[in-house]
Image (tube, rainbow, N blue to C red; front, side, top):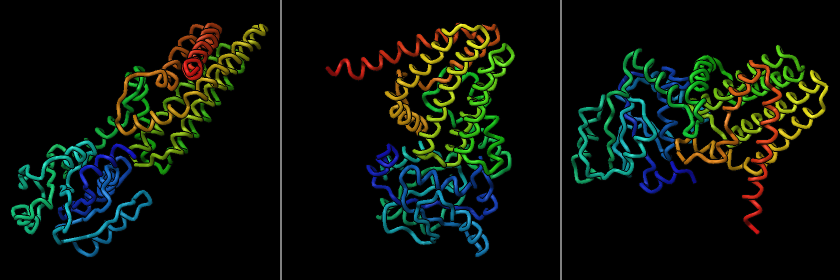
Length: 377
């Protein structure tokens, strides 16, 4: 059970009422690749809401029909109902003119129903709900006060919200270079991918192809091809970051997608290490480089076999915003070595890189084997 579901289960909150001002054109406006109304519905779904009741201010049949079409999305698992009646069971009440945030909704779901809320902050609040909130049955409503800074009423508001969403898609266990450089560049790619129908898994496959192209360059064994390979591997990592960003922004995260992403990452690394060793063998004639390349692949493969499942689990948790202390698992999934590899390619010292990688990968693999089986004896 996920943290989101657990949190919502503890509060026994399964129903939400989304109050929409009569501004259907804004509700259908795309925000980071997802229509505004659909994004709010998917956010509620992610925190554990099962039933969504949409209460719109004086909707026309055409407006309701257009918004209904938006909600007929394959990602939606909620039971959705248009309503103009107060609930018979406890329900969250939210302002649909604001961009809902998962963390704030989860926090609100644990608040006491006795907390007073200024409903004048709502863009639209039906009189019948106001009367209910002031009656003896007020415990049926858990009113979530809207945040004015999250209200989307003008074009500039949407642009700012999209910019903030893009900034928020990093993982809680991102490495130092991810935070300093990789995410900055990947977000620019994500902006482009959001304008296309391309899926996260297709982006992952694109990253795989670029990474294998990098390995082919290293295999040639020349200075120019080695530098080209290092640059292509860097591009592959940037694209690889974008697939997860797109998945989180578009609510397209799946366990299979996480496994496919980790699998492709490691396939690229194995081929790159092998190709660097072979390229150095071709350029120098020294068979030791074939051994170094093979050892680098072996050590990396053993580490991945031991920690692969944990890496996938931690990647999913980091995508949900869960934080944990830096661990060996994070080191295995770390992409920072690609910047070191680029530096070594520039100064024509790939021989040092593959030697260090061969030794380091196998020492690390031996340590993991000791941790897993040695202490169990």
